[in-house]
Image 1 (tube, each protein chain N blue to C red):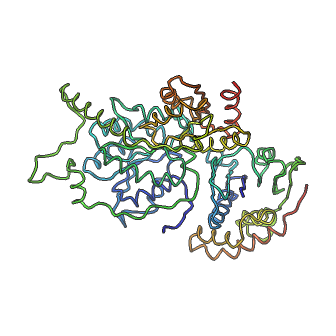
Image 2 (image 1 turned 60 degrees about the vertical axis):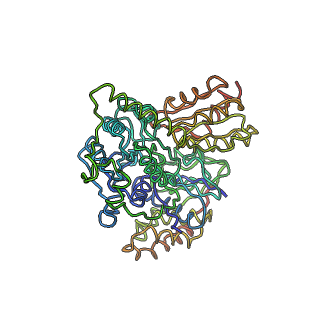
Length: 360
Length: 181
């Protein structure tokens, strides 16, 4: 049994990466996620597991190093915060186009622009609607605790390799900077080159006699070839939507009203839910764990039964659009958000819920 | 059991580490804990604060509007957090550098002259442990031996020689804290 430790979400990501047998980390520092690389540098895994940890000259360089490593079938990752993730978007589109598995981590801060270092969830659209160009999807996991920061590193690598697709952990300054109890995963050795070749026969690990050479590219100048690629991608995305949607439903079974919130916002809604229940109002929380694929079916199902939804985000309202699409006008969907690094209190959330949704 | 605590002061006073030691002790007692710092630019030369929650149950929000206990170690922190103590709650302050006394009458107010005591002892760095000792005298939410164990685990071994001085500082804090309202 692993010891229970106390650490920040960012630190948990770093420890988990080493323990899940990550081959390489490439990043560039930015608040509020700098502890990811700082912890990796402190742990110096190149001395133990052989994992590479490299501070690149820029975010653009880091994401392209990820492309290179992923092209060889290696388990590689990068992390950043909002402005840095914007810089990485071209590389992310290329990774998705070339169908390369990798782990991306965004510890969101307030924007737009250089914004603030305080927490935000305003990169939802960028993450799930395609921040780069072209029709692509990122498998997007939204942790709401330090434990999930650690666990989702393993989950993200698993899904990325299962579907040959980049996977993103979309966190924020609250979950990244907060310390909580965490049980780290047991150490898994890095895969040997033989194991990598077996798991990733498409990888550019050197040509062997039994096959022609492998090509990693997102380029296909002929329209019919590129359309075939797009068709393959879309078929894969439908499969992911079918099989990999994750959510947590808290007290939704008897609820008249349901909060829909992810990550840190879901934590704030948890307290608002308790305030509601103390006042005799049956409220639940639906927390999407995968933001893409989105738990549309579960929201559709709840919409047939509940009186209304309250969506809470640290943004001007992004995920609320997906909730409205799922609810499809059946019941009211109200929204409360704070922006620019401000965080609503649970009291504020409960007050607004009463004003906008319940007393209406 | 659920305790919601804010510890606030100047950057460099050991506010964040005091919160971490408290959270660690809570963890060692098998409680759920969260430690949420204000990590903004305000830390540089301005105020630093950390919200620590200890609970027997799963903790939802790690950031709060009101607190059971506020430990305020400079004037801006008193101004900000005195109004946010729950009625019947606890406010602990160090009078050093304060320009006014707390005014609330519906809460329990304690003064701890930890800055003066620490310099009198010639051990300024144990300031936060004096405050922690005072806090745990008023509300023994975690056992002192768990605090010491937590400190031992979070300090690098080369600093373990400082453990007795820290334990002594907590004892002094427990002695000098006094109720003022």
